[in-house]
Image (cartoon, rainbow, N blue to C red; front, side, top):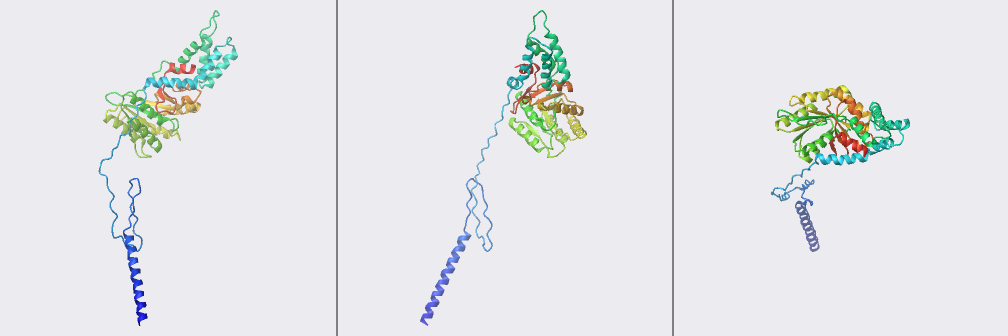
Length: 383
């Protein structure tokens, strides 16, 4: 019995130790705590696993009640018009100077024979000036440079005068950005997608802000979410409000709201970006026509700017014809003029539409757009 008793005591002791060990493990599991990672992000502990009962909640994280210090983003100060013209003229001279230099080299020959005049004509045609304007210009140059009494006029001066006349000095190139009777000026910006239309709206806004005018942007190209976001970014950079609607919403409704906002808040100018889809002319005509009609319930449209990519040449002219038939275009914005050696597109598009080039874009920079000036343009061509 003594040996049996000792075995019973040993078994009971082992059982007690096992129970105590299990109890300790369960208690440690219940008190387990998940520490939040560095960086201040609160992480919720996962729920207890099957067979484990949570008996105490993790401690609440400390909450900082102090107001966070939020600094408003600094607004950009757009470049003024005068410095834009100087800088863009220099850039245009670098990109377009080959045309003027080629013409001057030909016109400065000792003998201007028929082969030389044909070469001059070819140079002008290559620059996208167009057949009729080229023939008229060559005829005037031949007349003025005809040697009389052995004294020939200065070829550069003659070419400059004739090119300025060809580009046009009698056109009103002012952009009508202000309205009358206390209403804002309303500028409708049209053109195919890819010509730089939305970017042009943002750049015009910067020009107006630099002239201390108040501006509202209407993101009526609702079919391209990227266009709406892009316009919002342009507005934020210079502190300009942007009116936008739901993606795929009615463009006319957004345009109406933008102009109404401008009227209600006494804004100087409302710039409206429009859709540029050219799937079919009838659909585009209906859409743009509706946008303009709806806008004019609030205020008259003071300017319709057609944005054209200068590098597209004849395709750009086809686009210009379509839009001029749909809406009353009052001015042209030529973008990417520095990316093409065909500056003659200025002459051809003006003859095609009978309206002036009013603004030119010469680069990707936010302030790489300026009012068009015929004399400055020709001087840049001549280098």
